[in-house]
Amino acid sequence: LKPSWLESGAVSCTRHLLPQIGLAVPKRVLAHLAAMQVVAPARFLDGVVFAVFLLFVSGFGLMLFGEFHKMCVIKEAKKLGYFAEIMDKIFPFPGKKWAFNLTHVILFAILIALLSMAHHPAQEIIKEDVEKKRKRDEREEKRESADKKATKDE
Image 1 (cartoon, helix red, strand yellow):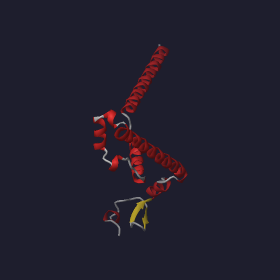
Image 2 (image 1 turned 90 degrees about the horizontal axis):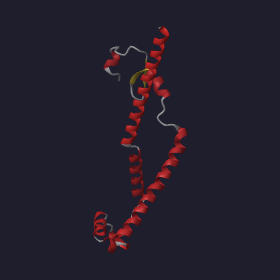
Image 3 (image 1 turned 180 degrees about the vertical axis):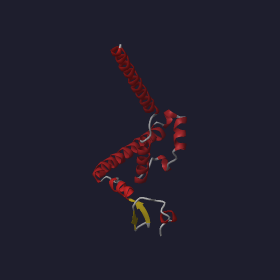
Image 4 (image 1 turned 90 degrees about the vertical axis):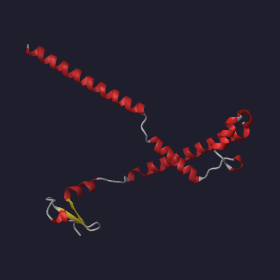
């Protein structure tokens, strides 16, 4: 089952038939796909170590927040007054006890990973400043070399 645009000769390069899909693909595309790896097996251990570390960080973060919740809602509730009531209404747990399980740890780890991938605006500003300085330095070097050539020619 070849598409009509392939049968009409619209693709002029040599084609190979992919039996799984039933489409003709140019040789250069096949060579590019063979060179490109989607998964790097050498990086599996790095991924596992990062995932385990991230799970520990996530679980520790949830445990710390649980201690903060217990301090605000149970231990220091009289001192904190209205803040303790707000905290209890925002996070309504049965018996005012903070509880989390592996699902919460995994979801919090995913949230941490996603937030870690975001660029801070300061990074972009620093990058722009460095690029502007590099361009300015290149222009100055060109001017200096043009001035040196002009003085040599005279």
